[in-house]
Length: 276
Image (cartoon, rainbow, N blue to C red; front, side):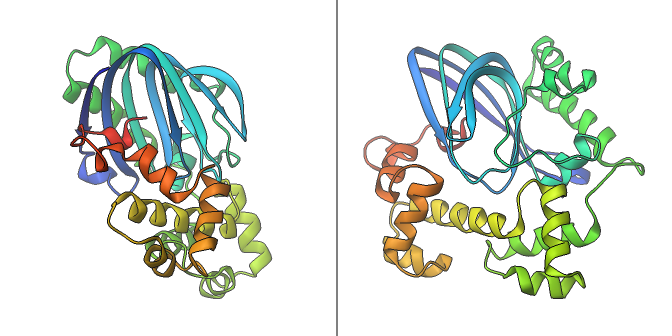
């Protein structure tokens, strides 16, 4: 397999909305399958070649350019031959604004041509015509700035954004009742508005963010699983293992070996752990 991974830095004005850019170009002579576990953001994939997508919440299908919403389960991607494009990792609030004031229901992965947004759907072709990575990142930044920084941008309610920020800052270690009290909303109202504007209920987001932090620590390679469980708020190591099987489909040890094989044999390639 040959590969090129190029990280890009979003402009300062977008950094509260955009987590990162990653340009990628790959070629696989044989089918290459990857597991995409739940993460703490949504992924806008501006791809030029189709991927096969499958998983517990996704009907098997093919897509080149799509949006992966927040999810509490894993997705498998597979391709043979060339792959190229730009991945943009966004906060849920940015995704809500990008899509004109709507959230993606948890686990959904719509193709860009299914979103009734011709400007967004045309972006991959514009990237293909641009010869440099800096130029491609600039095109992405221009569209995002137009959508996210406009005074008319439709953002989630301030209370929902506050609840997300608190959950994110604590890696899911703040209770829904506490969040409701801090926002001044009832627990039921917070759950309803949060699900409508983020895509998952706050309790589910707590679970996903806790898992994402645990996955990061497990991927570090030197952290005992019992210590990871304690640091991330799990009752014990078996609880951690059950959550990995539920959200990633495999055990923590298998996750570490699959997602971070370089810990066991070769040095990492740039972008190897985030090359979806």
